[in-house]
Length: 202
Length: 202
Ligand SMILES: [Zn+2]
Ligand SMILES: [Zn+2]
Image (cartoon, rainbow over all chains, first blue to last red; front, top):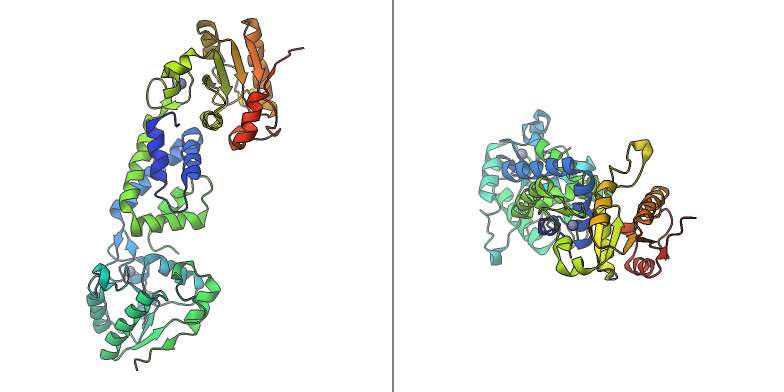
């Protein structure tokens, strides 16, 4: 029995955070009330601000509260002729941490999944096609997850690239099949960038 | 490099939660933005509401958004003649979970620490004295932490009880010395309640 219903609600609310069970939610709530109300207020404000104001980059669709993200507005990145396709914004973070890549990105915000009604337009392929047509891109690096849906998505994009005469490569080496790109260690991910292969559509 | 400064601030802000390092803060922020913005907004509101509106019970000083907490207004608890003294609201939670105790509480919100300017009034001993004088209390169970400060605090309260002819007992058995009451397992805490001893001031 909690001694306050508002405290109970807060403990329940904290469980929307990944990896937070009932016991740690309780510990968090009591910690904030006993020792860090200022931190709790600050977090409330940041959460609200972030949930409302963080949208998606006009160019690459990753998270940003600006029109375009820091990577897309970087002149150094604009000189690159590589475009890396990922499923989620956190995949960009994982790739940036390897230091192996200095081109631009495009975030699908998902993968093809016809059963769930997620077709090419839902993952922004119309927008991607425009970019491929309008920008100087020589290589599209397909870094979707090594799952059935991720592979299917990569193949569709490779076809689009072939039509536009752009080389499509797929990251390789060591990304465990059925795994999740964002949880792979940096070394494995580095290797998968260095060992990428041209996609053969035959 | 994060791709948004607001996202960076959110990740930093999440670190006010106990047990949350840079890696899990990052995972939490991305999870909320990608999959649970509604949960994030809800949490923001609950945090703000709790930090502002959860105060202290008029009688026992534990957390509540009401004038008095659920335990203090319970008629069953009011029939008890035992009063248990703890340092923090989370200690009440730990004791309630043992199911060994059905009396009332008084929360010191700390312990005596003259060096830090925390004297008897800072831990509510004036208020406690009033309660001991006005309510029918036959036994005061001292469940302060088994630290030097916790022991010193228990002794002062035992003296106050002696002056008012009220039995003071100290929880015992198995609470590790130098430990923290709220992290002790339930069995140990149960034993410490069952094995409590009358305080001998000689
Ligand atoms: Zn961008
Ligand atoms: Zn109370």
